[in-house]
Length: 547
Ligand code: FAE
Image (cartoon, rainbow, N blue to C red; front, side, top):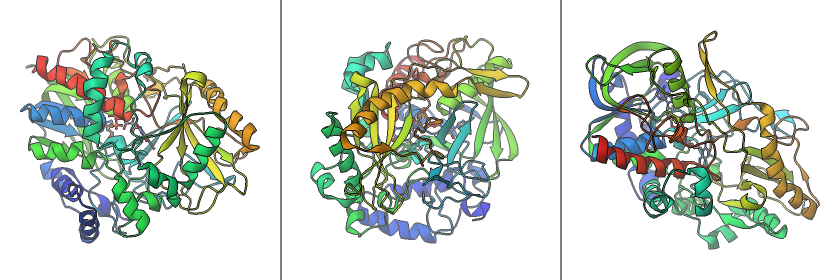
């Protein structure tokens, strides 16, 4: 695939994407998918991107969950907003007629500026499965720090483009430990419901779950959990369940049932492109510059903030550097992106009055992965929906909540696979490294041991009961635990520490954090519903009092 084949930019392409995703009916999606396949890449949309010298009332850095909530609510309140996104707009099909690459055949679209894939499951049957790809501004960033690889989405829609769509509200009894300064009544009565509605969260039809071939793996996971005395819970998602049923019936193009995950999802997943971003577009008050990366924010002479932005090409090279002024700036570049920016801006003198909490309190949501080898009489199915829909809850007893995850290889693997979220207490810190000119993270590989111990409270017991063993071939040779990574970075600009109780950065009026950086390292479940709900809460207060 050539770079230009999937290069697109900003408003023009964005409109078409939201047009495509704005159709409600399954047949509409299918028909439009066909139309999209025939579409040509948009040309020279840079004319629509933010011009150097612009003065904007509100600038949002990043287009993930926090950024989208901020932009939508500001626009609805009558504020013109510009969103800056370093990734692509993901609205234009490649030569295969699809916007996103399949998990089983990664290509240039799959990874952010890498010449070789870095797949979370690096091995199968012990053999390495990573392969060479063209270097490109692809969708999944595997960002490597000394002790951990942090996976993140890149593009208009942020993590919603690549994630598994599991949309989980934490148990209320656990909320006090997640965000101690936030009123739980308000969250559970108002902001979690608002977030769930805005994201289109829904739970699988249990009767269909019990019969469809594509969730045999989850039924095996449920059976094994329950036989060992663990509660199995259905996990809500943002997948269009009616669409998945149509996939199973073979009447629409397949997405979850074609193993699409990690590198984008072409049809049934309601990413932010189909929810918040579609509503943002309808306001007519928001523009988005994709392939634009914010590099600096500092106080402007006449008030507001000077924001420096690199426009990049699909090889990652800077083509233009722009300077704009914004009255208010919302940091929504994700836990890692926001933390890296703020740590560097404080250390290099652009925002020296930020406090010493900047960069602190970062956690991995206790992520750890593992597989179990089942008996031959317990197959998990060759057809596996890529959207997980069940979890094993041992949070209060053992500190682990394990998602029963798919291994959508297309063949029978006799494996059960799990992503556990654990109560890992370790917290890391971002710091400026003047020698390298980069921001480091001091996470240590050994800090995953508590996560392994907590996950073992579930899987040692299941293995003993079932007479099964751990898989040792998925993360290397004779390696059980996927303990080198996280999908759920959280913290780095923690609420009430680096900011006030609503995300206003200490030291600078008009600068806000509104993404996963606010959350101190753990949400007890998958994080994006909490990130969205907290952003809904904070922006409501900011609009009421600061504008
Ligand atoms: P995020 O969505 O990461 O958005 C930040 C955006 O800012 C990105 O689009 C960046 O490209 C952009 N950006 C960064 N720096 C700059 C800059 N300097 N200038 C301009 N733009 C910039 O942030 N969570 C769940 O709840 N359920 C799941 O099933 C789930 N599965 C996941 C699977 C994978 C493989 C991954 C990677 C994540 C998964 N997550 C899941 C995590 C979830 O996607 C993540 O917590 C949220 O996306 C974080 O939202 P934020 O708004 O903080």
